[in-house]
Image 1 (tube, one colour):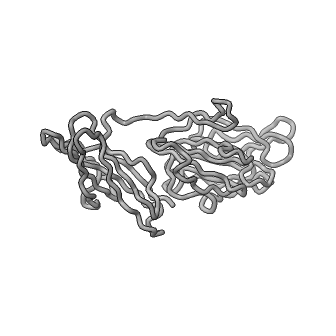
Image 2 (cartoon, rainbow, N blue to C red; image 1 turned 45 degrees about the horizontal axis):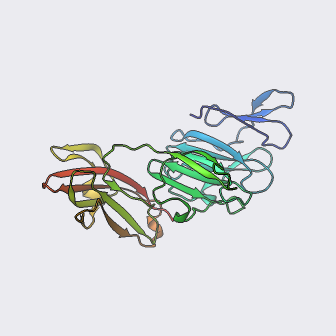
Image 3 (cartoon, rainbow, N blue to C red; image 1 turned 120 degrees about the horizontal axis):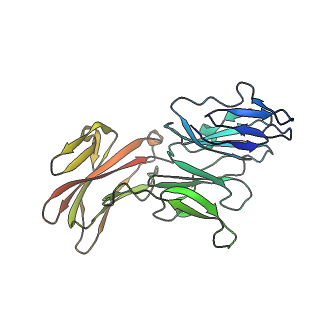
Length: 294
């Protein structure tokens, strides 16, 4: 449940509207400082599986009224919902037509990232960050990978011009699940591009890494004596070529070339690996989750 309120004039009558604190409450000002519920259907329904975590109003399509960006968890296709204001305070869900599918995030900021006068969307999450730049008409294609640093990942907390050079900078907070993470995918999996996976030596003298891509996690993780915990279902997995860590190196990189096949768009998968140390000890790695995007 979204635990706050936003005040904005969405129906162009010069008064304020308050949204929140529940997932789909919209209250209209009667002009005399009184608030009452908006007419039924003013906001598209929110399913029980979708929990709103953040809201932001902005004129996304340049038509002069305030549209709504809703961020939440529990909806497989989008962390984001774009709601277009028809000018009277009634909102229509245009997410599928205007926002990339498969971006499952945990936080967002709505700001003008490229300085062209419209609002863009900066997304973040566990080991994930992306920018979706407004085309000026309220459609948000995913920006290229060169728009973020190579290892950008985390939750966008503050976006401001910190160095006073006229553009916006960002501060992200990152949560690491364990200090000995060995498997890492530095880029999003994209159709027609190479998906790279790194195996790291975390100080135990690893010399060989194996990794596999699976479509499902085990319903109950399997703890294997002396190896660790198996999370990815091996029955629905593809084994990738092994990676050899060269002497003096702390990282080995493998890759899969993703075909340009629209059927793969939005497919979610999981990665896990097995490392062999210099003393021939075996250990399972952490898991990595990915979703194929355009």
